[in-house]
Image (cartoon, rainbow, N blue to C red; front, side, top):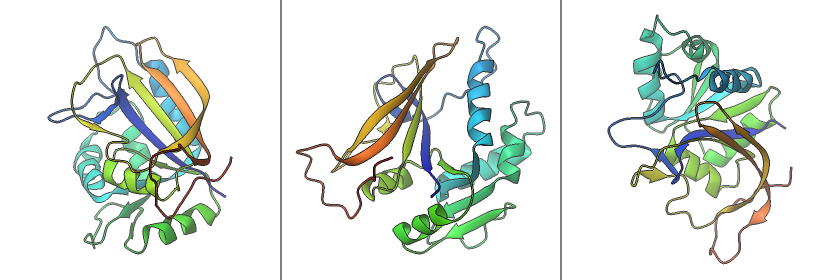
Length: 205
């Protein structure tokens, strides 16, 4: 069974999507060494052979990365070559190579992907999709790259959640830039007293 991994950039106050801008490990501030972060992302890419996205995040990436002929991070080449899966009921023509549109039941589509042969399935950005995956108990692992930044406001991963899965910290890694990777694995069950009534629950790993 393949793992479904959610990987997100986060501020220290838990914001994973900022209005009007974003912070990226590919930023080129000459005073900040992010080579170790890029190395961690490369390890993640090497362990995965599928990228799962919501429609909006897919269209944002499609409009940006294929045009980056000067990219030195390896991200652009990876996104062109990796098998991409877009969850959408409206997108009919993805217009990006190696892309498949998933328009059926979310649980059915993702369970089929996880049951197929292959490496990890990674999803990034796609906050609405990620929240649905969490509610269905389909996420096996969370990798949060926490930046030393306070946003004050913005979308958070578990905002509005009716249930929060139990998680076990399996890795904590600090980088020279001040970014910290927190890697959590989903365990069986949900945190109590949240009134969760969804159809799924994480299985023990």
